[in-house]
Length: 70
Image: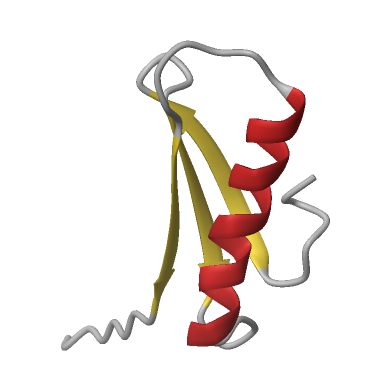
């Protein structure tokens, strides 16, 4: 579901399925899109699954710059 969205690099289910982390490419997904990208799966999970408690969806969008001096 999430990996088919353009810009999604990786997804992780952690804490025995209580948290879903979505890593997106900063150059492909805007700040506005990450809000929608966290809301859509939460709505789908809420509508289609039965589970106790809550599931947290975190979308991570970061830019990294690395340089080496030799």
